[in-house]
Length: 343
View (cartoon, rainbow, N blue to C red):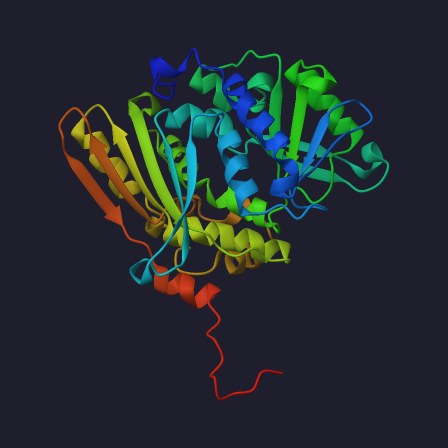
């Protein structure tokens, strides 16, 4: 087993088959969830979760669990005054490596030029179970995982439907008939989009652990939480808020096996506070580097606070801390004084 491979218990699971009942439930409840569902000219099923459709937080919670390949739970809860924010997401998985890296991670780059589309150029990062059918990312070779299923679902953070050249590519790479592919469209400016992105708090920790070279096969359980930011109609601001929720408010607890030294090192290296860019809004940082993600310190892409528990020794390590004061400065507008008339 390689250093980055899946835990043995995950190797035989199909994220697309496990997600299928969740997709069917989403489609059955589409009207109540504020979703628009149609089939395009090829027969692919398109779910609009925030472009023309209203969508909502409830839809975002369902979509987040679909993104995790049916191997994770995402719940909404109310926070108290001590939490610093009224609404939080709780995420958990007993197969966190497969759920997060093998399915939820937005790692499939999909692009087309304006010449190819006959109009505007298109770009999106695909996330969700269908990534594991196409296995176009080197990550799947490292995980030693490929899914086989008759249906697939992919989530795209976009403000318009993908052009035909992208849909044809998806069908070809996933080896699916058009009727077997479902695409869920969730712009980050929508409530559903904001929700499903903040629900990546556990995935961000898994991705950082992978970047640090930690043995993924030793990660056996994961739980996380993050404050749910309000959506914004401005794309950069919306993206910034969802990142800030994780970087400054995200809390992750990983359960691992193996050597104590490795678990302790992971705990101390993982939190976002290790980054030189820590302490400012992500939108500000992103604008400062001319919208080039690769110029941002990679250490920033991590949860704020981490606990690592080693099953083999019974020991737990803790590092980092949320900065809810920073988030409140970034997100909170104080109510007007009652004596001041509203205009």
